[in-house]
Length: 463
Ligand SMILES: [Ca+2]
Ligand SMILES: [Ca+2]
Ligand SMILES: [Ca+2]
Image 1 (cartoon, rainbow, N blue to C red):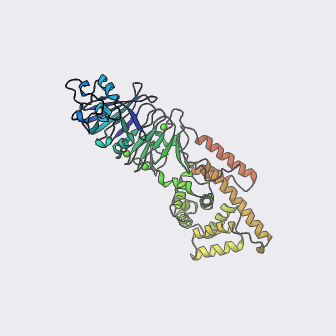
Image 2 (cartoon, rainbow, N blue to C red):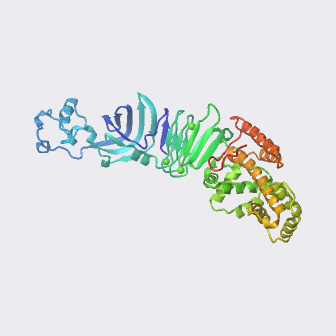
Image 3 (tube, protein in one colour):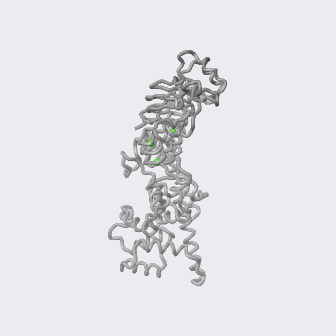
C-alpha cells in the first residue's frame, strides 16, 4: 500500500512532467531543483545506479574543436559528478556532445521508493512505500515523468491523504482509501473501487448530485470543506446516518447516483408512486435508490411491484385492508377525491378477483390522469381530468421540493408536509412553509440530517 500524504496545499504533480536540474545523485537519493517559477525541490529516495548510455571512449568520440587535454588528469567521463569548471567547458559543446558533460543525461537504474516535495524548504507532500522500477527509458533524467511514476507507484490499493488546505488528490487504479480532510478538495479515485473517508457524523454532510458529478459538503464551519468527488465509489463516515449502511464498507454511491441521467418526467413518475402508496413526499435516499434502479433497467411496473412489497406499504395497508379501502385511499392520495362509482366498481372487482394487481391499478389510474383529454366523454369528465392533474401536479411539486431540491430524507416530515395539502393554494403554501422549516433544522451542522439533493435534473419548483 503506497501512501501519499500532503501537509501543505498541493497538486500531486501526478499529471505533470517536471523539469529541473539534479543537484545530488547518490546510490540512495536524488535531489532535483525545479526551475523557476515553480522553485520546488523534489527528493527521490530509493536505490539508484547511473549509466552513461554512450560513454566517451577516446578522442575519436569527442566533437570537433574539443581538446581532450583540457580535461583534468584522471577525469572519468562516465563519472556523473563533474566539477563545475569542466561543466562550463562542456556546455560550450552542447548539442554536439550531450552524453559527457550533463549529469542529467545519465540513465538512472534502480527502484524508486519515495518522493518528497519541498517548497521553500517546507515539506508539501510525500510519497512512501512505492516501488517503481527505473530503467534506461527514463531518458534525460532532468525531465521527470511524474505521470508515469505516479501511475506505476499508485496502481494498487493505496492510502491518499490530503492536507488541511485545498488539495487535488488522485488514487489512480486499485481500490484506494482517500481522505481529503479540511479544505475544498478534488478527490479523483480513478479506476477501481475507491473509498472517500470523512470524519464526524454523516448527518453533518450534504451530497449534491449533479449530472456532471457530485460534491460532498461538510456543513460544520471547521469541518472538511466541500469536496468534488470523481471516480469515488464509497463514502465512509465515522458515524453513518442510515441503518442499511455497512459501517465497514460505507455508502455505495452507485446505488444512488443514477438519477442524474433521468428525465424530469421519469423523476416525477417515481414521486407519484410515493404519493399513491404512502401519501407523502419521497425521502431523498429512497427516491435516488429507486430512480437509480430505474436508470439501471428496472421498469416502472417492477418498481411499483417492489413498492407493494415494502414494509411501509404493509404498515399503510395492514393485512385485512379491503380492496374498497385500498382503492378509495389511493384515489384520495392522488386526487383528493373519492373514485367515481364506475371506476370504483371496476377496480374493486379486478382486485378482488385477482385479475389485476395493486401496482397495475395504481399505474393505470396515474396513466388515466395523464391521458389525452376526452371531450367526447363530456365537459364534466374533462373538468375532472384537469382537476386531477392539477391536484397531483401540486403534490408532485411538494414532493420534488422536499426530496429533490432540498434532498431531505426524514419520512415523518415527508408525511407531515404532504398532509397539509388539501388542494387549495393556501394549503400548498403551508406545506412549502413546513418544508422550509424542516430544511432549516436539517441544515444544522450538528443536529441536522444527511442531505442528498439532485441538482439540474428537475426545474426547482417555484413557490
Ligand atoms: Ca491506487
Ligand atoms: Ca476536504
Ligand atoms: Ca474509482
